[in-house]
Length: 69
Image (cartoon, rainbow, N blue to C red; front, side, top):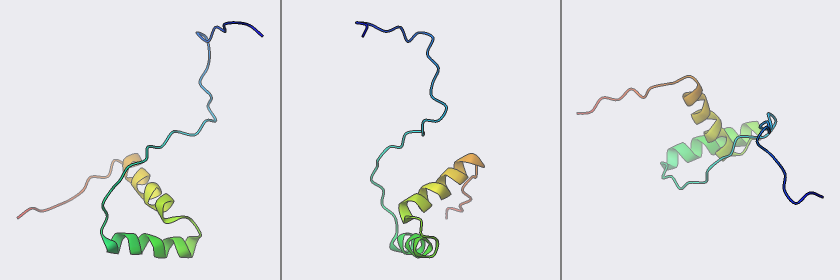
């Protein structure tokens, strides 16, 4: 085994999953209930469903439409 290795020409693994960051977020009870119901129908954990939905928003550059009064 070598003492040092040269990784200057290394190629990033194309099969490695992108990393996720754990956060704390406050969601309304109705949102959590909605995604938990979806989870029970699909068999996909509700946290994963929320992440999939938010990822879709990012991928399609969806903008939130709000009216402030």
